[in-house]
Length: 433
Image (tube, rainbow, N blue to C red; front, side):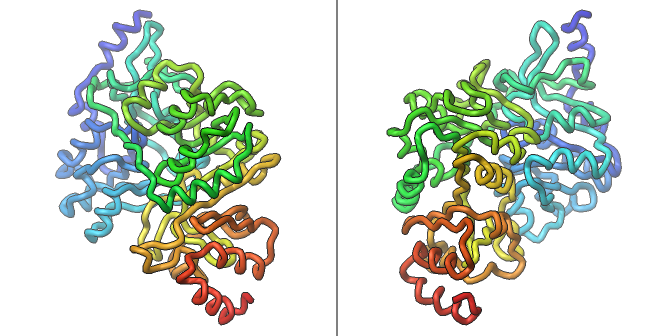
């Protein structure tokens, strides 16, 4: 078979792809770094001829008109596994085209496949090699599972998409349409940690031993942790998201992946999100393995790494240890993502630690993030029976195995001093202490 000829035969325009979308279609697209920008940016152009099209996305990196304009409400729904700024904008403007899909990341794709037929998958891929293989590049969170179950598969083949190793390969025989693209991948710039985040990072570092395997997220607190890891040795990475700070720590010799129990010598991740420097690092790099989210984020897999440390951030923690990381009351903010997956995996690991980190206050120090109870409507992201460590700029609370009375005292001790008397008074009213 001449794969180049097959490539030519399947080549289409984005307008051809849009013609595939019909009333009541279910469309799933790649996430964040691998979202198909050509398709999503033009989807609204067919609004006049379609109704009730369900589009599943995850952490949209930019605004897309099809869910931001009220006139398209009867045409499209944007069903999101993880809200980004543009999803919040749509909801805050009173539109009802965006809705959240509750999930744990390792089950997101499989649960979707089990719940409905998928008409179209639109993803992004690196260019085809001489043997007819593309790669799904910087994300296989759910993409490959969905691709294998969709009725029609479309790839935007982007010259800027890095070619990656792991379970990312897709053969041209599995693809129905190819659209050539050359847009830049979305980037997540490094966030310089604040003074408070640095203090949180210094506290977390006390809990990380040499030879630990880490899961780190994105943002000021994880970046702060990375800045204090320079004196650690032989750290490893088994993470949902591969980030810029991991490149820095590898180049500094802090991350070697040598002591990992599972996949020694390899970075293991399910997607990468950062700057062009990060995408260049993962390009054809055999030490970075992209594996499906249903594997990487499976708590039973994660727990096979000894000294596994999961570091996640939260919006609020109540006095008994319930963690809310995705909403403020009824206002949905982000998502569960892999937080519960990685936390549970780390806690099950031999000598592992599950760490929840947060600033002690919000809204310019006017409210405490450690609260007597979660506000009405707030979902529990990590239930109190799973909690291990909670860290603020004021210290560390180790809650695993502790009573409610003990937890209340430990959490008040790491709350902002301005709110400690109030928390104690509320705890007494409730009957916790």
